[in-house]
Length: 382
Image (cartoon, helix red, strand yellow):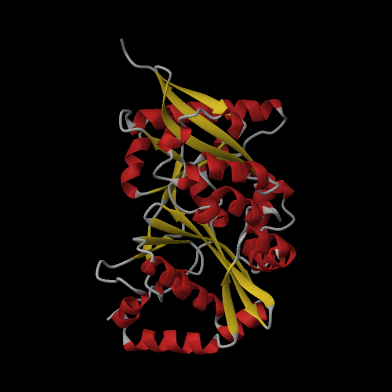
């Protein structure tokens, strides 16, 4: 008898099958604990759907889908004020404000699905397409029509899984690269990394550390995060608002909930000057991989103390000293991340507009949806 692959939608993490985490073992961002974080403290304009794939009643695949209502945002980012930005915002408000994703809009990398080895990936993605179709119908019953359907972020080899006829009308796009730092086998401590830098970049490191004199870095526990919640959010919101483009803003309690649910897998570091919290960064342990998460800082002190660059060095130091093989630095501040050794990895996605005429013009429209960043790649090593 032929094995039939079917999907089932879940709207709450309490509904997830008991074997869910067996498939999430290689990706914390699909684990029940992380999905609980999204359920409790997702951005106010985001709704999450959890998808299970079953073969003869056995769970063989898990996936995450998110619906974004961009009309609920006060701002898409306030750093760039120009005609192109105005046009982009106008397009989003009127034609692309309802976005349905297969994947996680808050992260870089393939955090959309995980299949067991016993099912064919292309077949699994076809069934996920059926699940996306069902989500659209559910949203339509609530009076919400999906404008854009997006599947992200995939490596080049994974594109082959999207060859089914239903994906023929999707526009294939590339986004800004995901910046990934790979630790060399002969680096056993952070000092080994410093020794491998060329003189120019060793000097950059020394200058950066000298600038940070007087700043105290502290690992913060749950109680300390809660006590500083208002300041933390102000520092985060300042950075987020000054980004070139945003599709969400975190909930105020997000970092608290991350620490509650992920415990030691979520690291929160505060930076203090004269007892005052002036910046923070966060890290997430994901197997042998370290993911950088959100950060915040006082802009004036950041420039004066080279705080952001100091944070990058601190993240690298922790990861190398603790034996992590990769650091996912995501897709912002590309040039400064390359100056500490991160390399760009091209990511691909698929996008379809519900309006057939607009969908035919997706290539022209995309240049407004994904602002291009010009940057120069650096090589800090000898």
